[in-house]
Amino acid sequence: MSALLFPGQGSQVVGMGSEFYNKFDLVKKIFKEADEKLNYPISKIILEGPENELQLTKNTQPAILTVSYSIFNVLKMEFGFDFSDFKYFAGHSLGEYSALVCSESLNFADALYLLHERGKAMQEAVPVGKGGMIAVLGVKIENIIDLLKSQNKFEGVCEIANDNADGQVIISGNIEKIENFKTFLKEKKIKSIPLKVSAPFHCTLMKPATEIMREKILSTKFINPQFKIVNNVTASPETNSDIIKELLIKQISSTVRWRESVIKIYKNNTKNFIEIGPGKILTGMVKRTIKNVNCFSINSINDIKTLNNEFKK
Image 1 (cartoon, rainbow, N blue to C red):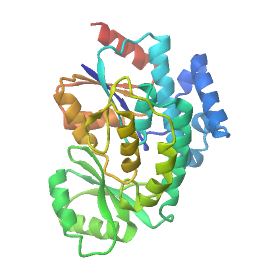
Image 2 (cartoon, rainbow, N blue to C red):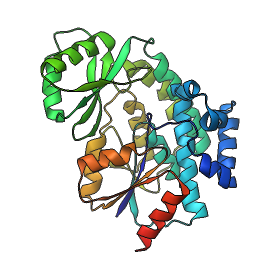
Image 3 (cartoon, helix red, strand yellow):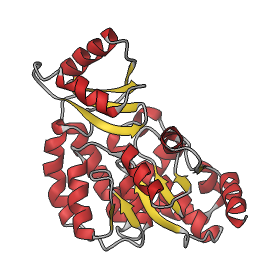
């Protein structure tokens, strides 16, 4: 059994998808559709930058979707890849929208609109400089939960945003409280790294974005996906489109339970994890969490050929 994984924010790089764009007309068509739907040249930002434009959340989110969807279509339409062995699709944060598009639950154009609006809403939920995120390394999540309890005496928000992998947990919240927690971790000789983000994602400070996106998501047409979508909020498979909508709304201000999702997929007899989209971040997370599985990152035509050869064995 196999699973398809779709990356989220942090995987973006100027020029991503350019090999596919230059070689395949279907990718040019997808990029053109993205430009027309968003009414500005997102394709130029993806292929040429500038980087500071690509890093804006309202651009990053539809950009990563566009590249992931393009690679998926090349794999399916140009290389005739057989997905009959696949049972689960999962995406990290915005990657969940890519998973839904590729499993035919959500229209690509609608997903572009939702992600652009989601990016704007998340960016505007907290004034710039008022929120922060840090990665805590080498500590089990159970211990981090206990460490966070010690911060309850301080005012503000300091919460687990992403449970990414064994020994990699992301914390999000008010900048003052995040700084206090960072100092506390240093005293305990626990390593933490500040993240270059424009807002404190996946914590209760994102509630204003949740309210903005609620109506937009509920009024968008979804159908039941062709594959089981292991969602970020519950780390469980879901195929009911109405429930998926509610989970996408909750996801904005909830913990991304990625480590649990990967374990859940693995325990359901999955041996192959294939990451579709820019970067290799999710592949690294899987390898940190589970041993003895096959991991593939699809970023180039050569990657597709390697994958095809492996699946023919």
